[in-house]
Structure formats: C-alpha cells, structure tokens
Length: 163
Image (tube, rainbow, N blue to C red):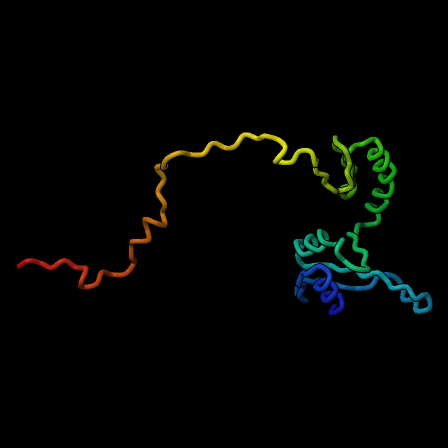
C-alpha cells in the first residue's frame, strides 16, 4: 500500500490516501525462481480517483497501467482489434469503447493535434471585434454596495431632533 501511494504521488503528483483504495492485491502465482514481478490489482472506492490516474497513466515511469475487464469483454476486445486496425488504415477515426467498436468520420491522428503553421495570426487579416464606444447603462453592484454599511449608524450620523 505504501509503495503504491508513493509511486502515484512521485510520478503523477496525485495524493492517494488509504481510505481512497478499496483493495490491493497481486495477481497470479508467486514464483520466486522466475524473477518476474506479478501484476498488482488496485480497486478504488471512488471512480473519479481511478479516472484521474488513468488520464495521467502515460506519466508513470517503468509502470504499465491498464483497466481491468471481465474475461468475456477481453475476448470481445481481442476480436475487435483487427477491425479497428482495418478502419484506421482506411483513414477513419476508430476506437474500442468497453466492448464496442466506435467509428467516426475523419482522420485518425494518434491523439496528437497538428497546428497549421501557415495560419498564423500575423499572416491572415482577421476582422476585429467592434469595440463598444461610450458607456453602457450597466451598474456595477460592487460600487453600489461599497458605500453601504451593515453596521448601525453612529451618533454623529444621526440627525439631531429639534425641540
């Protein structure tokens, strides 16, 4: 538990407390002769902590992170992989969402945005927004409330009564 929370804090800069983690356990048989480390299964109490870690999983050093799915879903995802590659080769944007292949029109770009260097703001004349000339009729609530006081008036502020 301590190693896990320290690794997440060091690599991802996310603070995980003991109460955020539901269970932590190793998967597979313990084989000391092989020398391989067994995978760790982590279950979180709140889904938003998992999502936060999954968004930053590329920042981990020497750690592979993936989401755990049931065996049936893993089989479906394995069957959809050739179709996914085929659609991407056609130039379509495709991804696997849980157990379904989602295909959208457009070019797949490996998640990197490319900017068009020829479309710089200096090279293209763009119309500027029209500036409002003169004052508007809007009142600033802070200026109105600034002069008001919530306290009771002092004696100097109370007008004298004429007798």
